Length: 378
Image (cartoon, rainbow, N blue to C red; front, side, top):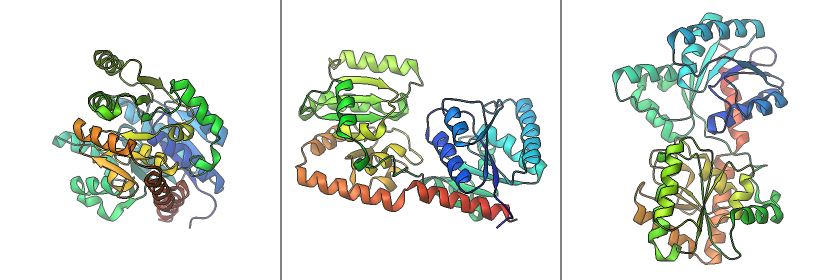
């Protein structure tokens, strides 16, 4: 172990909503709790205030830019920051800033770590080269077994430097025992759910590949789902897609049964307020935070059979269906809504146990700090 506490610079384009952003903040807390120093280089975002409150130093640079000149300038500034702060590690969490982070780490003579929060297709040789900066870390962290397999398929040379650290769920926040009935009732009222009405919750950014439209279509087609309330929560990243969803809802006559709720500030209560939670992604989720968080709350989860869902939603904890198959999704939703209370309780207990055993935030933070200590020794 290197002498003294660690100083780590994390580099991420923005600090808004999302798994990479939340992981940045969570590792910030862990670093500071261990006596270390956390520096975040970013263009800012809504989580920047929380990061500062946790004790992080925020350095604003245009690290989302893909402009080569900007990347080189950022590299020089980050290298200077590493020297001034005594940082032992520069940790990149996205591709564009990873180029600046790698150059800065080599100039400053410190370790370079990357985390794959997503999977990158790399359809052309140029794209594979560009994405390859993420596979060149002294340690390359994959956030699921699915992600690790993807990295090795494209960049087998990273095998000895690759480590899988599953995305962590904060089990103090996502604990059904800590959520009051009032919080749940307030959300159901805000959604417009009537007593006894089944609620199908679809969390996630409003963007086409997240598959919200499939849930709407499935509920419109299946007779057993005609009274269910569909609640979509999440930021809008495409106004065009939002308009398309609204047009679909109107065309199907579902305006009274679909809510586009936007950002939800109380997701633990939202998971408890729902009868079903759906992760209907049409492309692989590298991990799939929604499924893990919802299961930690004991929610009944239905997810498309892609990506990390194969690790979070397993037999006995929830259900999967072929991605994009609206008929199969409708059948799964109808079956799950009709489950007797005893069967739901069994699934609920198994889901909570599964997440607590494999996907805790403590495990993620401990394993990440161990990676930091290992690369800082060399």
